[in-house]
Length: 182
Ligand SMILES: [Zn+2]
Ligand SMILES: [Zn+2]
Figure 1 (tube, rainbow, N blue to C red):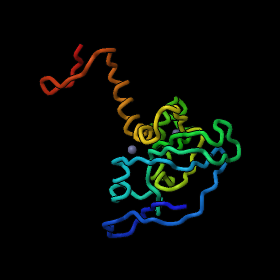
Figure 2: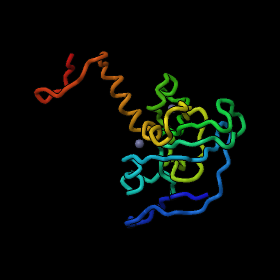
Figure 3: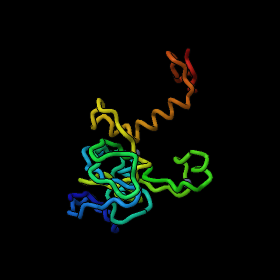
């Protein structure tokens, strides 16, 4: 398969992404193989590519707003079928055992694995992901619109949810402070 990789060398090159040929990865236990249809770009990808974050895997395939179709199921999978369209986000996996995971806040996991940072991401023809951490997508949502929702959309939704805004309400900056307006 074709994949875009970043290989960390010093000094950082002007064009750090390289196109390479790689074998299609095999899904392990609890994992699925996904043929990538769309992978959006996020500021975090630029931090990874431009070397502004410490290297976790070298070389790495960036990309963590991935939409594609499951083409192969690994052993011990049950949640999806071959042919399902799914999304892969930044949190590739959480440890499942730390304080935060045990109380259901896996986004705060102390030993997380991130897509396109700890594990190869979506700038490739195929990606492997854990079935527990991928998202089924509604059929009427186009893939190119679903992809950015997997990171930027989640952040916006979380902020909106936590703002506790009421239906029909709005927040606005007044006197340099953010205040509810309703
Ligand atoms: Zn992101
Ligand atoms: Zn954890």
